[in-house]
Length: 203
Ligand code: IMP
Image (cartoon, rainbow, N blue to C red; front, side, top):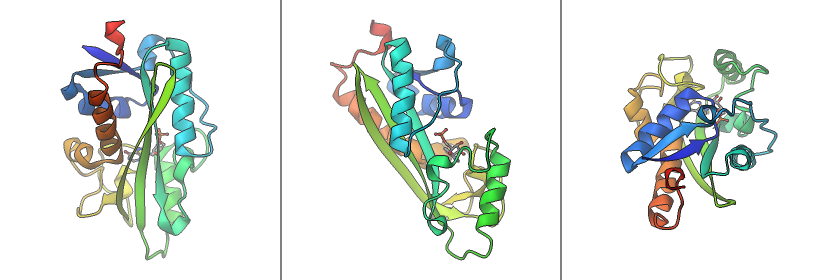
C-alpha cells in the first residue's frame, strides 16, 4: 500500500488521519517510524506557517512525500485565542487539562461561547508545499464532558449536536471534524493528481 509520512508524534492524530485516508488506499505513517523522534519547533506566527515548518522538516530529512497539520481552537470572545498557541496555552509542557481549565477561567461569565476548531494541512510533494484547510464551528461548554478524543474535545460541542467531541464516537467526530474537512480536500487533490504524485512505495 502507498504510504505518506505524517510529521507528527501525536498518536491520536496519526490514527485519525489513518482512518480517514486508509479507505482511499493510503497508509499514514508517523515520522517516528522513520526514526525522526525530534519535537519540531512550532515557531510560526499562524497555523499555515507551522504546518509548513513541520512538513518541510520531515521532507528535508526523508526526501519523500509527506504531510503535516497544524490546528487550533479559535474562540470568538477571546479574539481568536488560543489559536496558534492552543497546544501551549497554559504553558510548557503542553497539558490538555491545564489548557481546558485556563480556557474555562477566561470564559467565566461569557455569554458568547462561539468557537471554531481549524486545521491547515501541508502536503510536501516534489519540493513544493500545497495547503488544505478545514474548520468546524461550535460552542465552548460550561464544563468538560466526555473522555474520548484529545485536546479541547471535552469542552467543544459542534453546532447541531448536544455532545462534545469527547462524548461522541470517534467515527462521528471524524465525519465532521476540522481535520476531516481538510483531509477531504487533500483526498480530492491526491485523486486529481494520482497519475503524477509519486507516493512513497512507488519509489
Ligand atoms: P496541533 O499543533 O495540530 O497538534 O494542535 C494544537 C493543539 O490544538 C492541540 O494540542 C490541541 O490542544 C488542539 N487541537 C487540535 N486538534 C484538536 C481536536 O481535534 N480536538 C481538540 N483539540 C484539538
